[in-house]
Image 1: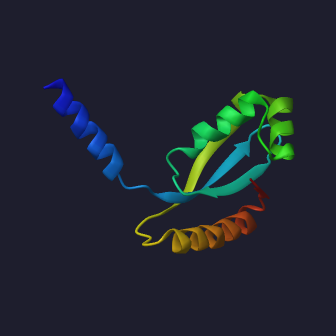
Image 2: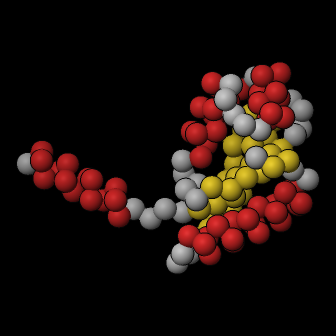
Image 3: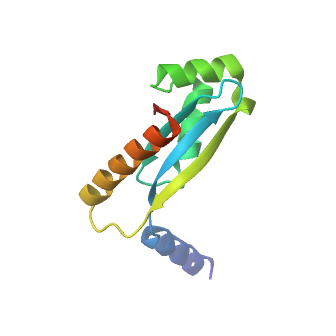
Length: 111
């Protein structure tokens, strides 16, 4: 029975719907905001926080703010989800457009 449950769980994982999206990282202490996009919006915060904690995030301004103000001052917010995109090209193009609009609207820095 355990083997069947594992196979079912693996199959469900492989068939899950991946949703892209646009997100914001905000620093309460400085008022700065960074906006980016990712093909799987459900996984990006973990990735971001890991690279920031390790000091390996490629965006120097964000990493400097993280070091200066500390993790407790930062928040993550999903701004928009992009579902039902048939191709990765269409999804990527749509995400770039949405990200530009959100950056302009929030006067945010790129991630």
